[in-house]
Amino acid sequence: MKTLITLALSFFLINTAVAQDKPNIIWLMAEDMSVDLACYGTKAVKTPVLDNMAAEGIRFDNCFVTNPICSPSRSAMMVGTHQVKINAHHHRSNRDVPLNENYKPFTYWLRDAGYTCVLGNHAVMKKGRKIDCNFKTEAIGEWDGKSKFGLFDKYDRFEKEDQPFFAQIQLVVTHRGDWWNQVRQESKHPVNPAEVELPKFMADHPVVRLDWAKYLDQVEYMDNEIGMIWKELEDKGMADNTILIFIGDNGRCNIRGKGYLHDPGMHIPCIIYGKGIEKGKVRKDVVSATDLTATVLDFAGIKVPDYMTGSPVFDKKFKREYVYGARDLWDEIEEDIKAVTSDKWKYIRNDKPEQAFDAHQAYLEFYRPAVHVMRTLNEQGKLNEQEKLFFAQTKPTEELYDLENDPQELNNLASNPKYKKELLKLRKQTEKFDDEMKPVGDDYNPVHPNSVDVIEWVKSERPELYQEMLAGVEIGFKKMVTEYKASLKKKK
Image (cartoon, rainbow, N blue to C red):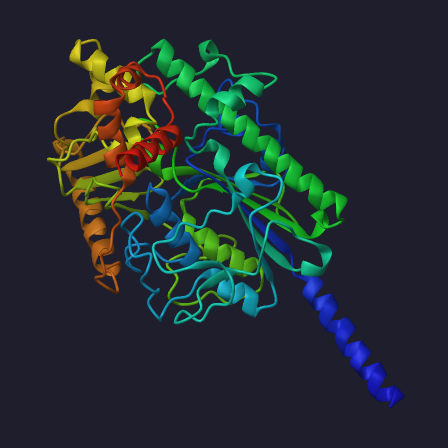
């Protein structure tokens, strides 16, 4: 009997040691953020925590999402497979449709390997619990893909007994929201609008500069949140056995950013830091956000499923030449845009060229002061050629950019005969991806965006606020939604 107890105890200790040897993994996802950190060269912003992690870890300079909108991008990352292939490419659609049986969320594999999966964190704004996938999910619970659709085991806190754990934490502060003014007001060192450096495609106007400064204020707040999370790990004695991955879920919510396949919409920050990670390295190779999903499994010692279109970035055989991007439905705006990005070239194919870049999308009317100001300047003939690009009445059928010489993608080379060979090569590559990523299903269940109704209500019932909006004032989308709903109740 004593021998049996001794053997059982030995077995328990060995398995516990193996489990604890696996690293904890924290995936921090900043919402609506491009490569706008000091360590990436952004001026006027202070991001000491992430700068230090980049200096003591690995900074990836060419990481791109597969879609420039939150829910399709997050869907791809949750499965590790391109959102078009899993039929999750239309924003806020198919929320009642189970994921195709041949695919599983990557947290399924982590939990199967003994990981505790945690969603959110008690210390960050709104607790960071966003999932936002375009297939049927539940935040907490088991997963079988048929009657159980849970992605995580628990909310908000990781404890020693949870090890090894995987935590996915959303950093919402950088997302456009009614809190931006308050964050700026409470900042001990608000970003000076005079010191920001605007992209060449944005007008140098006081409203535009202030809006950019507010965005960087949110970035600084977010950097501090990451510092608090790491401090918690240190206080609990878990920092030495933890890997941190920091990325954006899509690009910044501004002109040519979120919603577009140009660089500000697709190009995201990516920093990996912690246990076993090489220090002070900068990687220039092309990485897809779905590669990071595969990398998480690789860190956990899990074989990457064959269905994943991502590959572990630390595998010796890792080599990605292109990231395939796609933009489809976003609220009331139907689009069909495809793109491939390499380390040197960007190709974009606009299959709905009649749909202007500035589509007057209802939701964005509340959240893009620069668009309102620049529309007026455009009507007054005060924008230069680079600033006018976004306000063309139609889109070019094809776009080709030399990223080495034109990183802001301002000079479209698609009609230049000198670059015909490159154009044909990338056109063919895009068509190849189109074929490889054909959706596994044809379900199409979009939701009606309430922003469409709210903007019309603001125009008719609150015209004074609408005029403020046209002047570049963010009047508060959530506030307007509340007032709109209250007005409907009064009518009943």
